[in-house]
Image 1 (cartoon, rainbow, N blue to C red):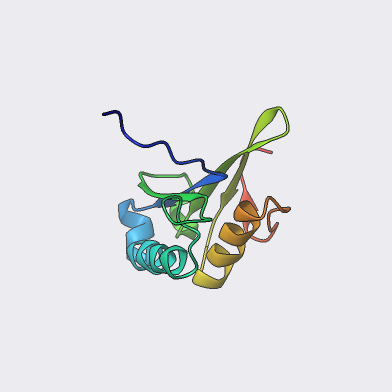
Image 2 (image 1 turned 120 degrees about the horizontal axis):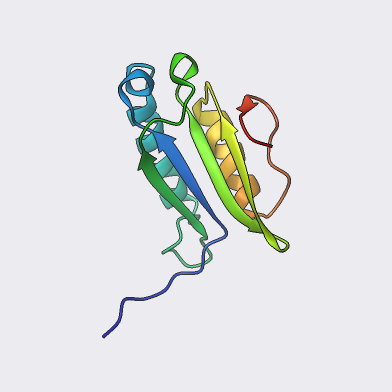
Length: 112
Protein backbone atom coordinates (compact mmCIF):
# COMPACT_ATOMS: atom_id res chain seq x y z
CA UNK A 1 0.00 0.00 0.00
CA UNK A 2 1.50 3.39 -0.97
CA UNK A 3 1.96 6.07 1.69
CA UNK A 4 -0.82 8.56 2.26
CA UNK A 5 -0.54 11.94 0.56
CA UNK A 6 -1.30 14.95 2.71
CA UNK A 7 -2.13 18.21 0.92
CA UNK A 8 -0.07 21.06 2.31
CA UNK A 9 -0.30 24.82 1.96
CA UNK A 10 3.30 25.45 2.92
CA UNK A 11 6.54 24.25 4.40
CA UNK A 12 8.22 25.92 7.37
CA UNK A 13 11.90 25.26 8.03
CA UNK A 14 13.63 26.20 11.28
CA UNK A 15 17.42 26.32 11.28
CA UNK A 16 19.03 24.02 13.82
CA UNK A 17 22.62 24.86 12.94
CA UNK A 18 24.97 25.50 15.88
CA UNK A 19 24.64 29.30 15.92
CA UNK A 20 20.85 29.21 15.75
CA UNK A 21 20.72 26.46 18.38
CA UNK A 22 22.78 28.68 20.67
CA UNK A 23 20.04 31.31 20.18
CA UNK A 24 17.17 28.93 20.98
CA UNK A 25 16.14 27.42 17.63
CA UNK A 26 15.65 23.90 19.02
CA UNK A 27 13.25 25.27 21.61
CA UNK A 28 11.52 27.40 18.94
CA UNK A 29 11.08 24.32 16.71
CA UNK A 30 9.59 22.31 19.57
CA UNK A 31 7.27 25.13 20.66
CA UNK A 32 6.12 25.73 17.08
CA UNK A 33 5.55 22.00 16.58
CA UNK A 34 3.41 21.89 19.73
CA UNK A 35 1.48 24.95 18.54
CA UNK A 36 0.77 23.37 15.14
CA UNK A 37 -0.42 20.24 16.90
CA UNK A 38 -2.69 22.05 19.38
CA UNK A 39 -4.18 24.32 16.73
CA UNK A 40 -4.63 21.43 14.24
CA UNK A 41 -2.45 23.23 11.69
CA UNK A 42 -0.05 20.30 11.16
CA UNK A 43 -0.50 18.70 7.74
CA UNK A 44 -1.66 15.34 9.09
CA UNK A 45 -4.39 16.83 11.30
CA UNK A 46 -7.93 17.28 9.96
CA UNK A 47 -7.99 20.77 8.44
CA UNK A 48 -4.23 21.19 8.89
CA UNK A 49 -1.89 22.11 6.06
CA UNK A 50 1.60 22.94 7.36
CA UNK A 51 4.81 20.95 7.30
CA UNK A 52 7.53 21.84 9.80
CA UNK A 53 11.11 20.66 9.35
CA UNK A 54 14.41 21.19 11.09
CA UNK A 55 16.93 22.65 8.66
CA UNK A 56 20.62 23.20 8.35
CA UNK A 57 22.09 26.69 8.10
CA UNK A 58 19.82 29.31 6.52
CA UNK A 59 22.52 31.97 6.31
CA UNK A 60 21.76 34.45 9.09
CA UNK A 61 23.96 32.83 11.71
CA UNK A 62 24.53 36.00 13.75
CA UNK A 63 20.81 36.77 13.84
CA UNK A 64 19.17 33.44 14.60
CA UNK A 65 16.95 31.65 15.06
CA UNK A 66 16.33 31.65 11.33
CA UNK A 67 13.25 30.38 9.55
CA UNK A 68 12.34 29.88 5.91
CA UNK A 69 8.90 29.46 4.35
CA UNK A 70 7.96 27.96 0.99
CA UNK A 71 4.45 27.88 -0.41
CA UNK A 72 2.71 27.67 -3.75
CA UNK A 73 1.15 30.99 -4.77
CA UNK A 74 -0.64 31.41 -8.06
CA UNK A 75 1.55 29.84 -10.70
CA UNK A 76 4.81 29.97 -8.76
CA UNK A 77 6.64 29.22 -5.57
CA UNK A 78 6.83 31.95 -2.94
CA UNK A 79 9.63 31.93 -0.40
CA UNK A 80 10.38 34.11 2.60
CA UNK A 81 13.40 34.06 4.88
CA UNK A 82 13.37 35.35 8.45
CA UNK A 83 16.06 36.16 11.02
CA UNK A 84 15.76 36.62 14.80
CA UNK A 85 12.50 34.69 14.87
CA UNK A 86 10.72 34.40 18.20
CA UNK A 87 7.69 32.26 18.99
CA UNK A 88 5.05 34.98 18.41
CA UNK A 89 6.50 35.77 14.97
CA UNK A 90 6.76 32.07 14.09
CA UNK A 91 3.08 31.54 14.94
CA UNK A 92 2.05 34.58 12.85
CA UNK A 93 4.05 33.24 9.91
CA UNK A 94 2.48 29.78 10.30
CA UNK A 95 -1.04 31.23 10.51
CA UNK A 96 -0.48 33.39 7.41
CA UNK A 97 0.75 30.39 5.43
CA UNK A 98 -2.18 28.27 6.58
CA UNK A 99 -4.71 30.99 5.71
CA UNK A 100 -2.93 31.79 2.42
CA UNK A 101 -2.61 35.39 3.64
CA UNK A 102 0.24 37.86 3.17
CA UNK A 103 3.34 36.92 5.13
CA UNK A 104 4.62 39.19 7.91
CA UNK A 105 7.40 41.48 6.68
CA UNK A 106 9.18 41.95 10.00
CA UNK A 107 12.59 40.29 10.22
CA UNK A 108 12.54 39.15 6.55
CA UNK A 109 15.87 38.94 4.73
CA UNK A 110 17.34 37.34 1.62
CA UNK A 111 15.83 36.71 -1.79
CA UNK A 112 12.71 38.59 -2.78
